[in-house]
Length: 409
Image (cartoon, rainbow, N blue to C red):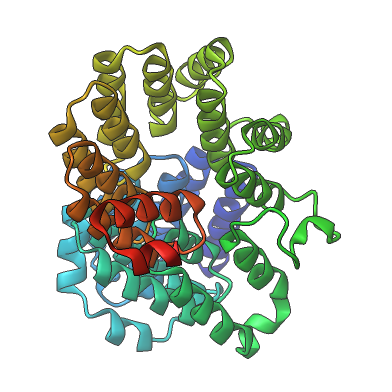
């Protein structure tokens, strides 16, 4: 019987390696029958279903077994399955039921994976759940704990940066602390890559563009983003296109290309890109964002907002779509609606200066320089090296007679 059990388990593992997930589940279920539903075999069954994108079914098997209450690996897989199903309320319930700190202390002899990665993954998913429930500051703290648990966890580090969950200074402080961590010493490139990503100036020294990994997609996209920030839209577009030739659905490259095409008023190219994205990946928020930007470029604000709203429906935490929605209202002279969109964007990306900057612009357009200066000051605190912030802040300071602030700008 033991020989059959080990044989069935090996068949399941081999099937996963060649992407035969139905076969993997079949043999994992037979192994579970022989082992009287052991944690290892239940895990392998759920893993095969998860890889086959049967998220609800995988979650049910794990929940029904109750191993998620005693096994970090099973709990992690359950959270991944619920995340895949976008069932964040169920995730929240599981986190309330299970004491994850106590769970982390349990030893699992059957699981051969890296437990630090499992613990970090659980914390990452907890943070993701908190973000969807609107608890962004708590999520930021949870993600920092995830990074401390596994400094190699790029998904946690990327989430902190992408969603602007904390300030640039705190991120740099975290990276510096990790740099001295022994676990981090094996991959200083990750530290350099993330530090490089935080730079805004294309000419800034210590860029990775001259390193042996200069052709890496992440390095190229970092440079493209800096060029975009510097309003070098043509160069930013060219850099992002280099990445899209290798990976045509690279998320950051797509966003840079979409924004650059809109700024360069290349309607035909943006139409082709948006059409291709809708055809290839209609469930992606970036596809609908591209369509919204295309209609915004055409001056059809109402149609643009419909597609931007669809983008935020697919991905409720997509702050950039709310920002462009604010622009569409502003272009029609609807200042109140524009500010409402910018305020919502500020909640979604709390440490990004752009929503606050544009709220200030709207107050300036409605002849309220005092409130405008207040928001420009907040934007300046978030980003001191954006010339647009300095320009607007200086104008508002001049209008309100704040000569001291005007001199600083």
